[in-house]
Image (cartoon, rainbow, N blue to C red):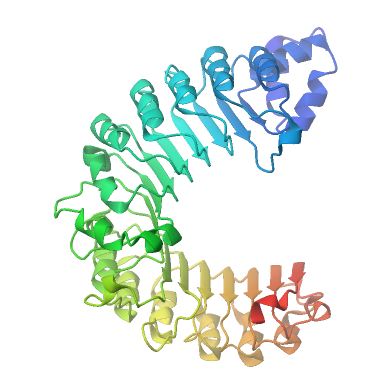
Length: 467
């Protein structure tokens, strides 16, 4: 091995993907150890980093070409030693000049001072913060001003980020492509308007409101009123995920939904105020749409909805079926307590999607309109490979037995379905048509009944949800 050129050894080491294997190889000789040090561009650390500053300094000095660092303190307790703090971020900024991607999860001791150190990382393009309660808007502003290359920013449960100057700066800078804000209590839909021209650059937006905090503080009407009618330049948006948001007719996020002409994936979860006209407009503009996920809220007692009740009907599904010829993933769900006759998609609307689009994955949760007739219709779904049924109580053994006749079906997931018994799965037993069968919390299906029904079977039975 000593006679092999360094280029060949680097190629060999580069083909070893598992970290444990790379660690083992690097310990075999000094030459491998030195070459491996230069090859490592990513590192993931956690509670075992102790003492923090000394260990981090040693690692950064050893792996001098680090571009990606993840530090995750999930499950941390004080007896495990000190967490990473601002001094640790100073070490990262000083010893990792090539740092491009940084993820900090449950790092509860970092403050705005630490983020100000990261502002010197000129190559930093992606920052993801998950539960950093001491960070404020000032710290985020320090960072975005210093990191000119920042294109990905994720803020999850950063509860004290309140001032929005950083959003305004990002709006003027026009570099951001991926923005994720989840459960940052003070940040509402109205604040997104401050992104300004950056909407034009944005490709992915995930925005989730802390629903419990909102309803408790009655922020709904405030969030709606803060939007002004205006043109939102979001033609480059590819993925849009909105959770617990207020969709105000004709403005704000409703404008965003209707102007994403290159959108490929949309997820609307418990978004209050979404109407048929919003989905119709989306379908007509977004011919490249490949995935749609809709979870409809059931709480119609909110004052916001008294004059503009939520009505999603088959008109939405019809528009999607007629305009989105590339659609291959559909997920439809109703929240607990929703009664389908009040506001729902009928079986005809769902089947229209199946017949007119190359649906590869179909997931239905609490959709009572889908029954044995729907299962019979799926026999003609030429592209369907993955079927997930959750709390679809109108499906019986007669319908489930037809699953074996769906041409390309290879994955079937059943959860909390009351009407299916072991008899419903009998045609699948021994056929090994399915690659994967998952059965969870279905009271009339036994572990014995799923044996041999697929090449791989997962069975779990917890009936506490019924009581």
